[in-house]
Length: 79
Image (cartoon, rainbow, N blue to C red):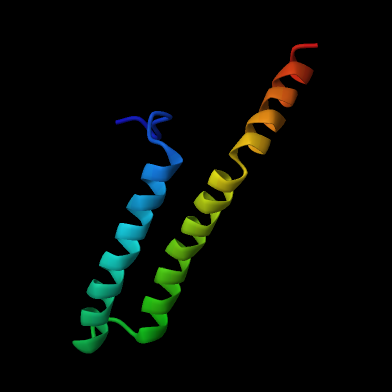
């Protein structure tokens, strides 16, 4: 398995992280209820995934700027 796949779009990654967050919320809620996890830990772990989601959304919003920056860097490296 490759460490990443450039064929997976940002939109698909965003949808997957949103799905993962919803799943974790359900699972962690149950884990807290049966005392296998503390609420603070659940909140922290969900916030980590929220940060991933924020990063992906930022990249999606600014994709053209990111592409332009990368192209500029590539041109500068080839000079």
